[in-house]
Amino acid sequence: MAVTSQPGLYQPSEFQTGLCDFCDDCGTCCYGLWCYPCLGCSIASAMDECCLCGLGMTIRSVYRTKYNINGSLCNDFMMTWCCPVCATCQLKRDIERRKEQNIF
Image (cartoon, rainbow, N blue to C red; front, side, top):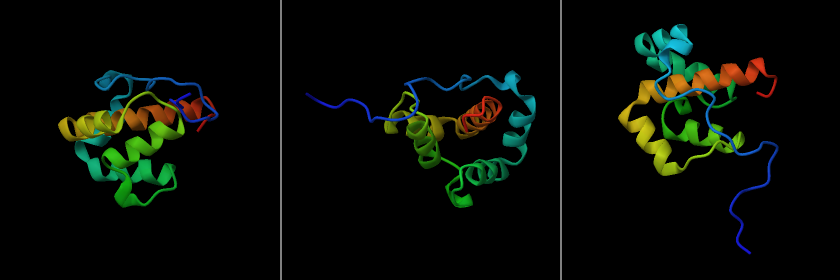
C-alpha cells in the first residue's frame, strides 16, 4: 500500500483565501505592494524562520506542509514566480486567519 499523505494534526485543506483576494485585507495588500521585503520578514518572523526565507517558494512550501494545505512544490514555485506579491499576501492572510482561529 502506498502512502499518499503524511500523518499530521490537520486535515487536508486549501488556503483560506484565494490568490487574488486583495479586498479581503487591503492592509496586507498595501503592505505587500509598498514594502514586499518587509512583508516577507514579518511572515518569516511569525513562523520562527530566518528573514531571508520569508519570500518565495520555500516559506510557502513549509507553511503548506505544516498545515496540510493541498498543493505541490511545482505549484508553489509557479505561484511565487508568476505573482510573488499575490502569493506572499495570500500566505500572510492565511497566517492571520489561523491566528484568529487559534491554530497558528
